[in-house]
Image (tube, rainbow, N blue to C red; front, side, top):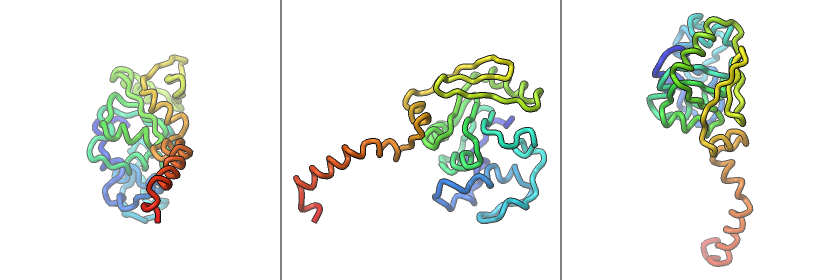
Length: 199
């Protein structure tokens, strides 16, 4: 996605924010850029006219799971729906020189790996993608590496806690449920100590 400052309203327009479910947003990802008509909630997107100039509509990028982007990706409002839409579409990794802070945080909490690379490296990747049909990257999260088609390996940094959560598939609820036994023991103690709270 060769454009800077892609904001959350472009990622998932405001009219689709009525649902609080985490699924079903993929068909409306980048709705105003992706389709030639105006989309509405509940509308079947299968027969909507696609914008042939939009990146994700080009056959070479069909079924891609890595999104290469420019600086300040995910800026704008803090809507978590933007990450839900990307994840529902099938995006698993976003590579960019920089991300908006809240979007960056929301991504890892919802299973999307955001990789921040130097702007010159991102520029190099854009040139290679443009010049090479069928270009593929392989991202290895445990090794914190990106394998390029020519065999070159790029390394990236990630917070160890975020890395653990992404590898284990843990969100905030999943992290809490890892302490189920301790929570039950605490609740049992509270029942004994303050039975009047439970009557």
